[in-house]
Length: 219
Image (cartoon, rainbow, N blue to C red; front, side, top):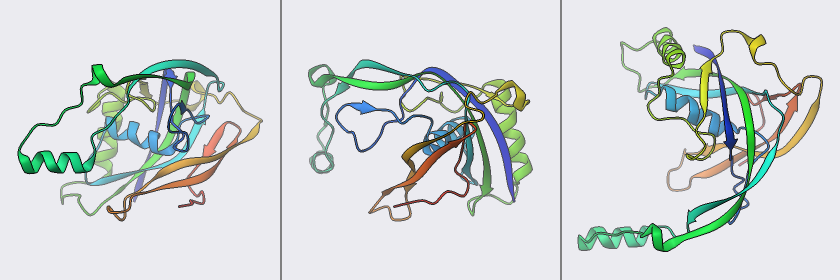
């Protein structure tokens, strides 16, 4: 059995990075399903449930802004970490010495409604049940509680959230329109931990709503 929830999220800026553009970041046109799942998990996560995104409603016009961000230009390699563990020596990246300034094309003044459901997993205990989890999520969303503050693609772009009690309070800004958003990241495939692969789908907005519940996924 699955239980559905609706959550409104909004913020000043968002950056849902396209993986094919690695040097200077460029955002997708709207919230991706994987980012939406991350927001829900930030509010309520439990090993006994799995979040599944159904639809994403775009409530504010898609607008871009160009900014410059400080990023660390290097990363710790797997071999370096293994050598440090073997030699029992510390490893560190001095961020003040490795900072690089890069351009980014981000979204600004965004608002979405996430429609999702969760399914129980094999890790649920005998005392767990869907009705209890659904009520726990709704209570936390109403109170603004979270395990860590959710963000819109990058941690420097925090998002506000509220449980949707009335759909009319969050109308789509693209009602009556349809547009293609091209190929978009759906999620990551963790079925083989030795070969984690991205999954994509053809994103389309119909009346400002991106339906991902039954989309065809490409690996």
